[in-house]
Length: 191
Image 1 (tube, rainbow, N blue to C red):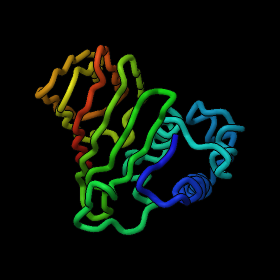
Image 2: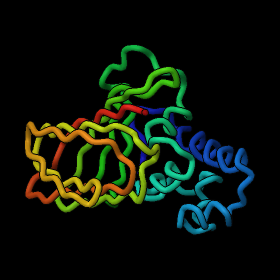
Image 3: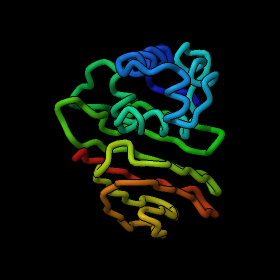
């Protein structure tokens, strides 16, 4: 993974924030590993900034810390401005999975909603084991392509122009069946 349009120290600030969240809860690396299913050695390397988290690992960490991925990434950023030009919108990539995530409207501590642009390459498959914040409201509007989204054990196939709205309380799954990549807007509203 790598960040674009963001300071080169974002990974370092993210590592420090992850370590601080664990320390605030009084958890050992072993306890955090038990709660997330991420190995102790990987967690240690993440907290030292030696390794950038995968989408799955960051998803597990967000779940145990009760944060959306955007909110966690916002916590390591400076105060976001009201206007965010496209060139300054943080972009996060997980090239191993084929996932690109643009924070169109970075979250702010005083606001409950945010907008994300996501793209998945054909065949990309991402599973989240739990809601980062139970009851978070999500609206997914497909801008290009097709995506399969599983929520509450129901598979929804969305095509260009379709919009799916739901409250997330458990696992979810995103898959791009192809043959082209999918690009979608994700609106997140905290409960």
